[in-house]
Structure formats: structure tokens, C-alpha cells
Length: 172
Length: 114
Image 1 (cartoon, each protein chain N blue to C red):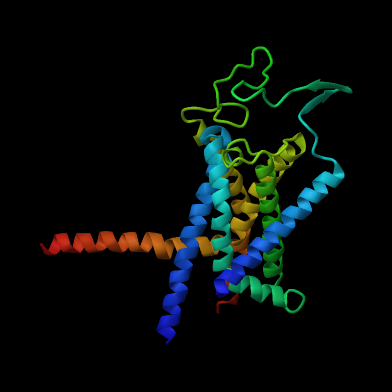
Image 2: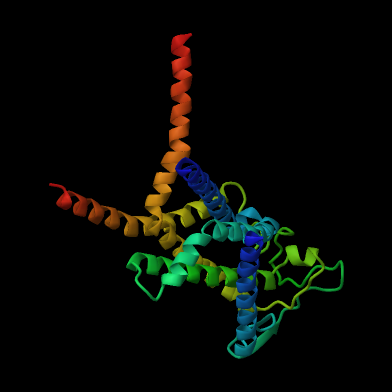
């Protein structure tokens, strides 16, 4: 039973790590529309809504736990993390909705034409820059988890693979 | 079923926030049509002509099609600079926040050790 629970937690952590890595790479690509091109920027951003939903689903237990305990006994770091995560959600929504409002590629392709304006454009740029800063703080607050997970699920398996390969060579 | 419910909650929060933002922007009048205002003088910039025509462009602003201000204006290895800049911002923040935290944690650990 305990082994099964630890196996589930382990596979969930692995999923979290890979989803987070994918989101991070996608974010870097979408942050530079001049290089990636507008079509990739818009479609990738829209697909990130699904990725962010998966990210939230994988961390659902933590969200519920902290929400119920927010006004009770809770460590300072957890409180800061929770507020920052809400700010990220609000800012992410603003990026998404302002991006939809100024869409030049994805929405017109779907036959949707919205009246464009400078306000949404400015909001889109500002919220994206703010998101970068908040993502930096979010990454910093989870830095130990990131290092431990990468070590456990990326580096160690690769090292084990090479070690097994050299053992096989030596025995041959 | 549980997961579907959770997805619904996330999307509901997203739609609710989006609606509030659109309402706020419209109420504040932040969103203006595409007019350039300089010293009280407004310059009309139409968004495009009839179907098949190119949108209005000022003299000397003839960029390659699809490579406008928001489009792919940087070719070659330009994307590396953008990615490095963004990773750099995150790296600086991680160094400023995570490093002092790990140092203080190590200090606490060594102080607690007999």
C-alpha cells in the first residue's frame, strides 16, 4: 500500500516536472514573437491555456489545502507562494485575453474579427513583462524542488543508463 | 468526473476574470481605435483596405510581408538573444532569492548540528 502511494507520488512528480519544463520552453518561445513568428506565438499561447490547466490540476491538492488554511495557521512562505500564484493566474489571464483581442493570425483564421486598439496592445506587453518577473520569483521559490526533481528524474536515470552500459562493456 | 469538475472550475475562473478585465478596460476607456495622437493631432491609420488589398503603410515602411512589428522581424540567430535575455532575467531573480535562502538554510542546519 505504502509502496503504491509512493509510486503514485513519484509518477505525479515526474509528470509535474515534464509539464513544467514544457510550459517553460513554450513560454520562452512565446515571449519572443519577433523570432518565432506571429502564428506560432498565437497558437502556442492558446495551447498554453491547456498546459496551464494541466499544471493547476497536478497541483490541485496543494491549492485546496492552502485555500482552506489561508486565514488560519500557515507558514509565511506558503502564504507568499499562494498570493504569487493567484497573481500569476490573474496576469496570465490578462495576457491571454489581451492577446486574443489583438490577435492577427489565430482568431482571423477562425473567422473571428475583433476591433483592435492600442489599449489591449499596451496591456499585453506590460502584462507579459510582469509575468516574466513573477515567473522568475515563482521559479526561485520552487528552486529546491526543481533541482531535486531534475536530479532524481533526469540526471540519475541518465547516469544509471551510462553505468549499466559500461558494466555491460566490461563484462563482455 | 472529479477532474472534469476541476477543469470546469479553472475555466470558470478564467472566463470570469476575462469578463471582468474586458468590462474594466471598456469602462476605463483605455482601449482606443488605431489612432496615433501627437500633441493633440490625430493621425488616421486604417487597419486595412478591401479584401485582398494591403493595409496602409507610411513611406519607407515596406517590410517583408508577415514580418511586421509583432511578426518575425529577427532572422537567423536573433531568437537566441531574446531567449537568453528572458532566461537571464529569471536566472537573476533565482540567484537573488534562492541563493540567500539556501545559505541561511545551511547556516541553520550547521548551527543545529551538535
